Image 1 (tube, rainbow, N blue to C red):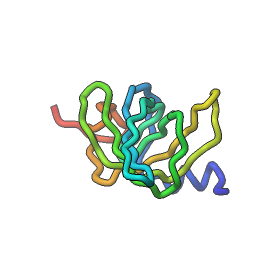
Image 2: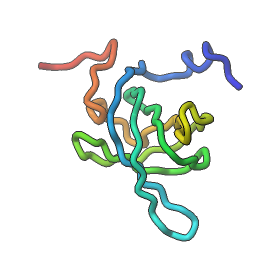
Image 3: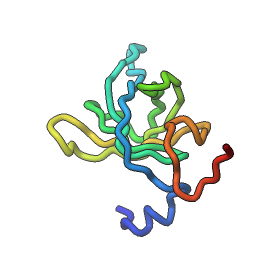
Length: 114
């Protein structure tokens, strides 16, 4: 497992702690689409840490619907952590097409025009 320092050095953009309700859409093997309520607890321009009640495979493609803006984007699961609360797993996800305004957060070091 990579050290915390190595993970920080690998990260492309700063994380911002936040709480945003999201819906995760995930296809399962028989073609059904799961529609799962979850929460983004930390976000960056390139990804997020989600707390969700399911465990997708690392590398799985999921879609995330932002609970406030109702914008939908595709992500890839890059890590899955054991439950931190009863039945809730932490999913590290990476966005396929980064948009600095998807999360609606102000990121440190990013310049914004007025």
